[in-house]
Image (cartoon, rainbow, N blue to C red; front, side, top):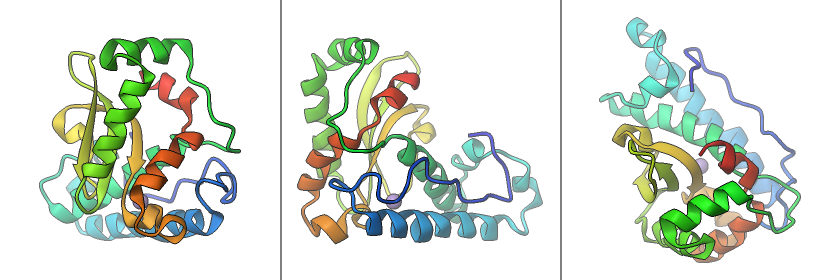
Length: 197
Ligand code: MN
């Protein structure tokens, strides 16, 4: 993402209650309005006296070796992206032909992809993300990252992201991350995913 300092909170592309049934409005309100906002505020704070970093893009800030910059830039980027990976109302979703073909090539099918992605989401210890990414050779791959680390740090381009921090699901699902991950497919925005290929 090519935006630069000072950062502002991106608007959600739907209402807080748009994902109700899978993700409740209260969770969305706190996740966007408090957690995402805090990453924006803390990134701005971290850059306030770093003039050389105020000119570079969010994509470049992700690669920083300064922890507070890397972590908060990741928090901003990852959430901007995550909101677009979802859509409501809950209708089961539909995966287009092009994406289906790519998933077949890489994972043997949509189901094979989903199994891998769920395993990545569940095996991430503590806080982090599950990702569908494209590597430099253009191959699709499922990975997970810890905290707010972004795949661009490994030279991989995000295609789809799932937030598995407890703040993403705890109110509705408590400790049951597996139930959240399974239910989450219902709000995945497959049109957006396909445009990222
Ligand atoms: Mn989050």
